[in-house]
Length: 524
Image (cartoon, rainbow, N blue to C red):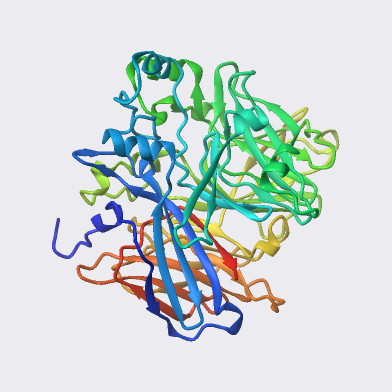
C-alpha cells in the first residue's frame, strides 16, 4: 500500500466490550433540549474467534454501543448481544449457525442427532446486528431473519432480553429489519414465508394506550395483506426495507432472489446465506402498493425498466395523484462482494459499486384511463418516467438525483410518508464525492452541503434529532459516531447543526467505537 493511501483496516477490527463506561467531556455547546439523552447503535463487532475469522463484514457478531449525554459530558458503553449465535460461536471458536457470508460448522456441544437435523434444516441466526426499534415501552434489536430480541438500554449492564420468533408469532420465516410506525402508533413490517408457499405478508401491530406490554402487543398483530412472489415458483426476493404513507404500504421486489434449488444445494455443500442468493436482472423490480385501511393490493403491474438493487428506501409520499419514491439504489448487488473481510483488511475497496439517490414516480388511478407510451409523470422538473406499456402495466425509470457514494439515508421522522425536502447520509469508504463526510441533500434543487473533518475520519450513519420546538424540516441536530483511522488518534462522537451542517460539539473516546449499521436516539 502506498504511504499516501489511508489505512482503513481499523474500520474492520474486532471490538472489545467495556466493563465500565468511558466518560468524555463535550467540546462545544449543545442546545438545551439536547443536554440529556441516549444515542444507541448496533452493528457487527466480533469477527475473530481464536484462529478463525468470519468471512464477511455483515457476519460480525452484534455489539451494542450506548452514548449517554449528561449535560456537558457523554459516556460510552458497549456490550455484545448475548445471542445464541454469539454464545455458541464463543464456545466452539467457530460459527455453528450460518451467517450471511460464513457457513456453519458442526457444533461440538450438540449430539449426533441434533447435528444431523441442523444439516437438513438450517438454523436461522439470531445475530441481530442490523437495527433497533421501539415497540410500546420496550426496545428490540433485529436483522432480516426470523429472530429479534428485547434489549435493556437503561441498564448499566446493557442486558440482552428475550428472543422472539416471527415464525411462531406471524407464520413468517423472516422480517424486514426496518419496521415503520405510523402517526396512529401502529407498527407495520413485511416478511416472507417459504414453508406455506412463497409469499410476502404485511403485518400490523396495533398501538396500545392501555399500558399493554410489548409481548401482548405482538400477540395482537394481524396480517394485512399477502403478496405472492412475482418471480415464479421456487424464488423469493430479498427484502430489507419498505415504504409507507398515510394510505399506502409500498413494497419493492428486487431480482436478488433466494431460490429453493440454491438453498437445497447450499445445504448439501455447506454454504452461507449469500450462496442462496442469485442476481437475476431479467426479472426486473416489481412495485406493490397496498391500501393500509383495507389491505387490498393495487392490481396494476408496476415494473422497473432496468433492474436495481437496494437496501434502503429514503421516503415516499403522495402528491398530485402520484407516489414519489426515493431509494438509495445500485445497478446490482456487487457492493456486497466488496464487503468480504479478506478484501477489506487488505485495503481492497470497491470504488465502482456505489449507491445513488434515485426517484421513481408512480401514477395512481385507473390504468385504463392512462394513455399508452407517453410519460405519465406530472412532477415538475423531474426526469423520471412512467409509461403505460400494456393494458395493465406501467414501466418506471428513475430520476437519478445524487452522484454515487452515499448511504444510510435518514430524514426528520415527522416527515415519514410525507413530502420531504432533505435527507441526510454518510459517505461510503470508497473514493467518491461523499467520502469522509456527512451530507445534507436537497431533493428539490439537488444541492448538497457537506460536513467534513479530515481524510482519516469516517462517519457512521447520522441520526436526526428534531428540535422539539422547531417548525422547519431541518431544525434539529445530527449525531454521528466516527472512526479515526489515523494511528494513535481517538474515535469521536460529533453533533452537527442539521440546517447549516456546521459542527456544534464533539466528544473524543480512547475506546474503539465499533462500526454500526443503524441507531436511534432516545430522549431522557
